[in-house]
Image (cartoon, rainbow, N blue to C red; front, side, top):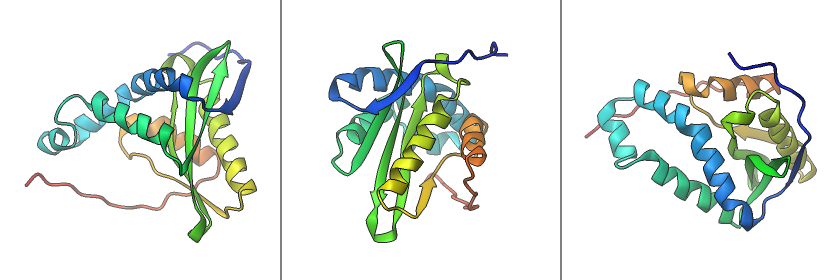
Length: 168
């Protein structure tokens, strides 16, 4: 059980390229338990097709791509001079939908409201950008349970979708 979280002097600011290594590090740490959970619930042969090497390789490339993408807006959470979380948002103007594309909080700082603050920040930004709907996608496995709780707490409604995979 985690100790009672203490309030943080956290701020959210636009991502800058010099923060890339910190964002990658915190993301890989945050997602380790998620990928462990996914591997346990997914057929192992299918999992190995998705992640033939180490999942960290593909996730690092995904974070690098998101942080560099021109169609994505990225912000970081800073506490005591350290990058402790990030959120990436894409706008789909044709449907007036904003998408929280990626979000992560360093495990040492989870449970302090940083994920909620980043998500609320992204929602406010989307609304001011003229979006009328917000969307976020996450997993249904146990490793994604904290993310689901955050989204539900902020009023997101679940659209049940069944996605099946089979190794060929």
